[in-house]
Structures are given as structure tokens and as C-alpha cells.
Length: 509
Image (tube, rainbow, N blue to C red; front, side, top):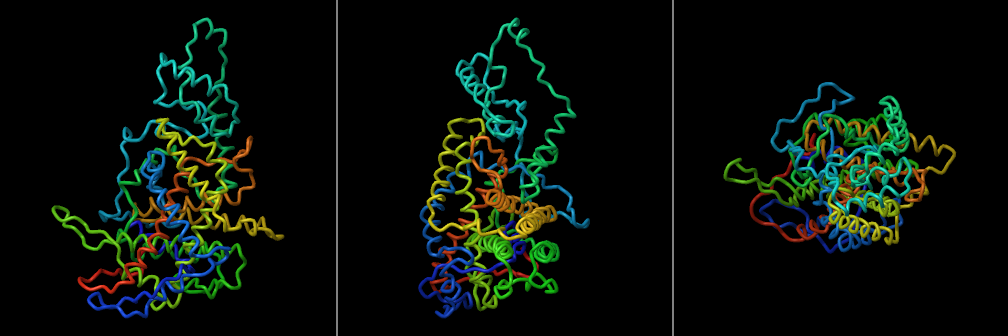
């Protein structure tokens, strides 16, 4: 469902990938396909538009280096729990209604199932105490507390807020020592609120997405591993309205009078746009293509009866062909796929650029040994990203006289798209929509931050939910690139046998 949702939410596309041997086109499910429809993949080759990189280079790098590693961190506590408010009111229209389909539902976590280090951590609150703090008589804890309390840190640094695993109760003092050393370090509620508002204002100037208010009483943790993104059947007017608002109201327009978002953008209309506006289109298009591929790869092939017969999920090559073949898309399908590679390269570059920051991050959940393991894997991914030779060049953007205004317009357009996620009726689609938009927004925040990243004293900071979204979003893109190779194999063989269902794309995600 989530995937269906995304099918339509990201319709700005243009793509191409690696060439391949002749691949037959789709015919009737019971007929052997002729060997003339291979253009879907044969046209997916050459240089990724607006990047100095070949499609085949991305395929090799992703499928052999990145894709095998990412699944090892996604099931870990740090990356699988995502906190979000899924009952926010839509800010753009008042007639939104929750989808009642079973596939659209998500299950929030019980409080006791969430690791204490995540459940009790509060961003930018050095007074926050974690329940997993050690006992007073724990000598190892005392040593760790002294080490942590002795470390220097700035008010904005993550170490100031998360390094102190132990509470101040670890340090045992006599009553006299406590009396003599007593210091009134309390601040008024008014002052605390002022500090927090300053931080929010500080962050808002650099964020590309509406931040998740994790302190809201309606925000809950969701385990992404038991609420996976896949086809939900979310379609019709509600889904159409989401896409329409994304493309017509928030994308840069070559022709504002173009009717309907389906025909809003194609490769021909990009020629007269500046680099920054082309980048915006390709990012949205690439994300949309990725979602479409997820839908095709995790398609509901047969519905269960809710009792003895289980749902059957699997790849649907015919659906893939319908969405991406040039014959069925007016020649746009391969270009849509190519935009997936563009979006992948943008996020890869962001991870490489943030590598110094990840070296300082604790990835704290309360279980030190596991946190260290997670950090090591993240740093390995970041190191691989740094070594990739043909990165997207963000320094070519926002360089002219109107650079500041154009950058702010770019940011506000993306910010608005993140707000539209609260208008998605399908709850599962809303969850994954928020996460993937947040991930892409975090990548943009990293790439276009004016602050030095990972340098001592720098105020640049990523919140935990931004890091979680960044890597889960990148994993989704990586999976999509990998699945293109799988669909090449599936479509290179003639198919016979039972029919495979194909969705009606009109008004679907």
C-alpha cells in the first residue's frame, strides 16, 4: 500500500540505466513474448543526467558493495524504530479521511518494546535522564560517568545530550560534600521554552522538511520491520489529489497552464530549466520511480482469505513493463528509471559528506556493544560512499546572483511537500511517505548546509529521526537499483502460465 501510495506521489521523472542483452517485451501472460521490447533496459544506459557518472558504474557499486551491507543495520534497534505523529490534520484541506483497508494499517510499538535509550532520550535536553542508567553501586558506571562529565561539549553538541549514559546519581558524595558543592542549576520553565524555541528557529532555517515533533503526545514509535512498505491498494481521487498538489503546486513549472499532473513534466520540458530546477524534478521523479519499483517487486499477487490462505507477495514483471516500457509510457519510462539513479547519487553524496559527523555520533540505544557495532557498519557505508569516484556535484548549484533566493525557494517547495504527507489517507503510506521525504530532505540539508560538518565547535546537528530516515531512505533507493537487475532477468525469459494481475494506474499511488 505504501508503495502504491508512492507510485503517484512522486511523478516528476526522467531516467535511464545500464544496457543489457536483448530483453523480450511483455505479451499475454500465456504467450511467449517477442524479443523486441528490450528497449526498457537498452535505453537505460550512458551518463546519468546532470551527473558525471555512468549508469553501469552505479549498478556495480550498489549491487556489489552497498546493497549487501545496508540490510545489516536496518533491523537494528537504532534504525528500525521511527517515531512519528500519524494523526496530524492535513494543513491543506479538511475532508481527509483515514483509509479503512487492512493493508493500510500500521501497528505502533508498545512502550516496553522500545529500547530505553530511545524511549527516554530527549533531543537538546541535557537534563534528560535515561532509565537505563546504572545503579549507584556500579563501579564501572562511576568510572564512565567521570569520563563523560569531564569531556568538553558545547550546548548544541550531541555529546552533551547523549554521551552521559549514566545519571548524576552514579556519583556518590557525602551529605557534607553535597551541601558545600550545591549549585542551583535550575532554570525557569519560561527560560527553557525560550532556549528550545531558539533551537527550533535555528534548525528551521536549514531544514528542508517539517521536523517530526517527537515530544507530541500523539507521536508514537513504529517498528519499520513489522510495518514494511509495499502495495496497499491506495488509489483513486484521494491519491490523485496528493500527487496533483505535489506536482502542480510545489514543483517548479515549465508551463503553469499544463493540465493534470500526469502530463505535467516529461524529458522534453526540462530543456529550458536551470540546473537547480532540473535537480528538483529529477529528485522527485527518482523517488517516485523507486516507489514504483517497490510496488512491482512486492506486489500482491494473490489475496488470502484471512484465515488459512495467506497473501502471496512477489515480483510482477508485467506491471514493471507497464510502468516503465517506452512503448507504454510515450518513451518516458527509461528516463524515469534514470532519475532513480540521479536521486541515488544525490543521497550517496550526502552520506559521504556527512561522514565526519557520523564518526562523532554515538548511535545510542542503551546497549553499548550493539551501538558500537551499528556505528562501525555506518562508518563502513560512509567510507564506501567517500571512495565513490563520480559524485553528484552540489557546488555547481546556487552560485549566481539569485543564488540565495533560489535556494530558499527550493527549500520551501520541498518543505511544502513534506507537509503534504499529513494529507495522505493511507496510514502506512503516510508513515513511509514521511520517512522517505524526511530522508531526502536530510540529504539536502547536509549538501546545502552553510555550516561545517563534523568540525569541532560546529553547530551542525542531525537529529536521530533524520539519520534513521536518511539511511532507510537510501536503503529503499539501493533496493530499487538492485531490483532493476532482477527485473532484467525476469523479463529476459519468456513467461507462460497463470495470469499476473496488473493494477489500474489511474489515481493509484
